[in-house]
Length: 315
Ligand code: NDP
Image 1 (cartoon, helix red, strand yellow):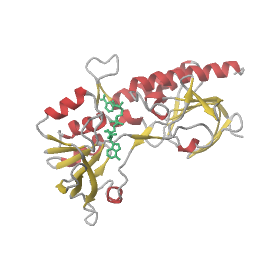
Image 2: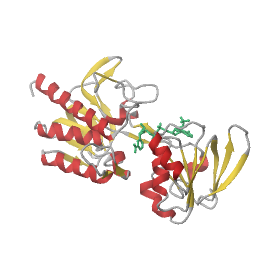
Image 3: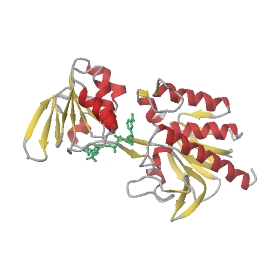
Image 4: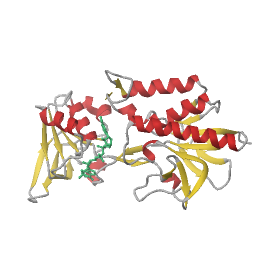
């Protein structure tokens, strides 16, 4: 007979770990399933300058490690497992995980979002052979080389700036002429002597599939239609993220882009009706703010709702 837990938290990023701190302090002994990317997006970022309380900034992995220790102090436990299937039709809910079946009275979904790809066959063929979505993970391999970054938001700016530590030149390619990035990040990228910005440009093909090593890009200027090639050794994607919520299709409501729909901040719904005891927080339900601090805030809300739900149901 599988033991029934009070709270299971899916995901170990900022939202999940904040939920773990709160549910831990409430004595709910939360189990955190760490997922495919333990620590979430903070674990693959560099300096976080806008998390309150760190006047000089803090490294993302250090921030997330601190949260993990903080939650463990209050009884949170961690399992390196991911969710294979879920049945929310009967309460307590049943989760099929890579580490076996788990039963839980409340479920906090904090499974975050994963990097988006262009979807070109040549790009997919060269992932890990010069194509990457994580500058912090792979930048080191491009010391002294010329590389390109795709995207026009803060992620792309951050990646381009970070990659100048290694690469001799970074070409930033953006499909439009207007940028989504915040002014401060765009100004930093524009002012950097080793970053060249090319707007109205899309990647048609990543060259080097036969060699199993990125050799360059075939580009197209979308205003003139003119094609060109750019010799580079690495391509980094900074084009946003996809929510990790596919496993909930049909069980809770998702929006047209696959984000979990919430009401009352963190309550999930099925056909518009609240699903009892299932809460969503962080980037899996937030397409607007997507910040470490907002993820932490919604993780706190989800934990307080879980606590309230258990109390109301006599646990
Ligand atoms: P965004 O959605 O803000 O930007 C994605 C960028 O990628 C856009 O410029 C978009 O182009 C482009 N893009 C998307 N799909 C494609 C495609 N198929 N081909 C080419 N280009 C594409 O995502 P970010 O990850 O940059 O940022 C998400 C959130 O996180 C934001 O709120 C941001 O402020 C925040 N953030 C903050 C940081 C910081 O403060 N240090 C660091 C990183 C992120 P288009 O503009 O044409 O749609």
